[in-house]
Amino acid sequence: MVNKRGFMRIVEASIAVLIIFSALLLLSSNRTAGGGESLADRVESVMNELAQDESIRDSVLSPSPNINTIKQKVEERLGNAFEVEVRICNLEENCPLESFPLDAEVFVDERVFSVNVDSSSFTPKKVRVFVWRNT
View 1 (cartoon, one colour):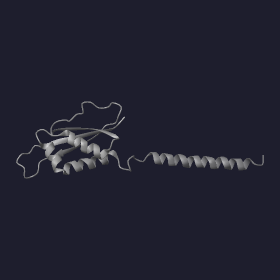
View 2 (spheres, one colour):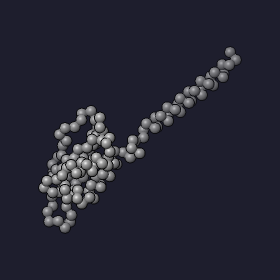
View 3 (tube, one colour):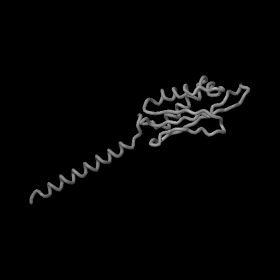
View 4 (cartoon, one colour):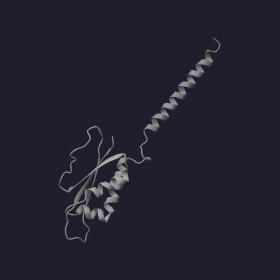
């Protein structure tokens, strides 16, 4: 029974190592995927790029907007890990997503596109982007 103290120190050291390891594991699991940038930040930066692109703005404000061009630009920027849907509607309208995955979290961002100051017609449109992870 002389080695009882040595055994207790080994048990204490093992418990301390387990506590430190679990704390490190818990802290590392809280980091966001994709280099520390959240999905909201990524989609917002894509929407800012779309808003500054003259050809995209002209397409959105035209009588027959090309949704596929906008969708392709968003998909290029976000990568293959996400599914993207785009809706364009008038400012007063609601832009719902008719079919969406029931088992996924859907992130939604929207931006208002308007004409330049020197234009004669004022018909702003709303572009709403729906993003969720591929399953």
